[in-house]
Image (cartoon, helix red, strand yellow):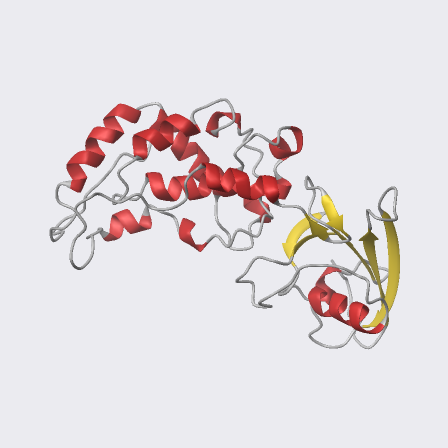
Length: 269
């Protein structure tokens, strides 16, 4: 982190480059820009691409930390670069290092191939599987049931947690914190009819019990979510899967009724 302001001064932006058509291995390019007030890391890349090297390749879209497109490795930490002030990430000599997300094949420069990421996401069936009896208006969930989801639905699939996971670095078959967080959302959703099937799959060799509980995914998440806690909850529920399935069936019998009191499902305690 910068110890003093570099605004109005020249700063160095060190970027990892790689073009598989011409390069045998990645290398670093260094660019100099003038730091203006409010400049984000994404602004810096945009300026470099527009004014110094049009071949620089990176992903970006919304610029508001919503789409998750611009996750990169900044000085060794995975971040969304669209909402990060460049000033905050300059070292004492006014330099920042930008690399692509780890544990992915590089397509070009800062763009990585996220195929394995999305394959694991699809594996957990992240969509809701509702009962056949769909109400005319809506299913009724209690505030406690909504709170139990721990805001998992706010995950933007940026991949920062996935690229910080040491297990992923060693085993690409591991489901990964991003997908397990989505699985947690569905397993705890009282509208879903397949918690037992989901838990059985997640308890396999490459599922929740493969997590080493290092907490890197928590530190990396730009939405301050807790994939490690979600994984721990899934572990506990997987150990009493049949009981959880029975409770879910009973809960779904009254999904369309008003909720005059709190309805609890086991959270693995």
